[in-house]
Length: 138
Image 1: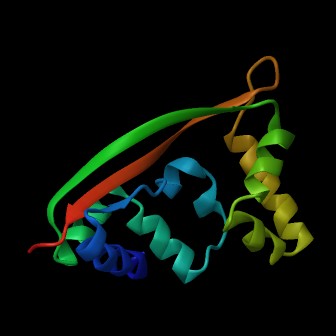
Image 2: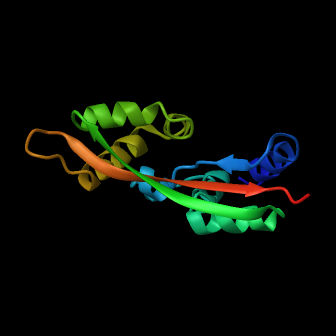
């Protein structure tokens, strides 16, 4: 995330405010902490929190930093729909592909237990993206 903040602040010098809208990974992937994410993924999860984003932006020298929480709900037809969709994610799919099949099955069982379905089998849960915007001082 630090790399992105630097890139955003450089682009803001020419094009206007630096903006980013990362999902709060602890909210988007309620099971993220259930498996051993690598250092970079753990840092990104920490940096996706709204207070950390404000700190990163002000620490990079950006001024008039504003943050905003965007809350959404997502519904999946059933657990298989949720799981298949999750595998399409840019970090989840490759991470699971690197795991042993036994570890993936264990994770899948834990995820299923944490995301109970309603009476029709649908799974609904909320997620949060944190918006941050700042300006490069003149």
